[in-house]
Length: 75
Image (cartoon, rainbow, N blue to C red; front, side, top):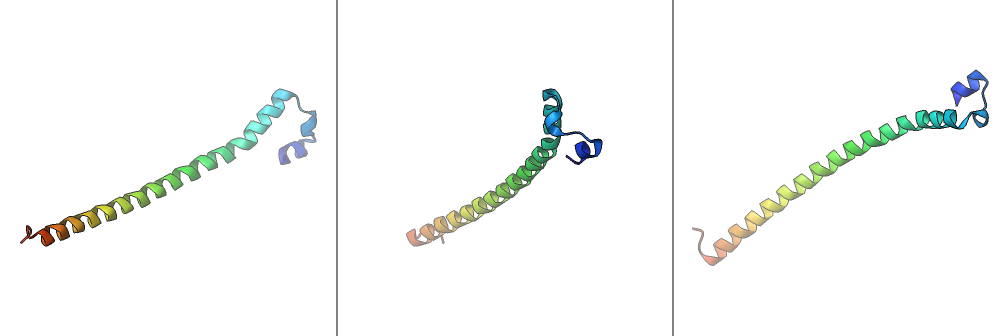
């Protein structure tokens, strides 16, 4: 918008192809930012899921050990 204002152009007076190019140029950095933020968020979610699975596996091991102890098979 600043570029058009500095050039003395009105966005409403642009041809359709020029307007499409302008809108694509304006929205592409936002789309790229959205992509990067999504990538980092997905990485964070995977780390949290991995941690939860490790905790769940440890709890299952403790449960199995406790059942063995109660059954008298784990001396």
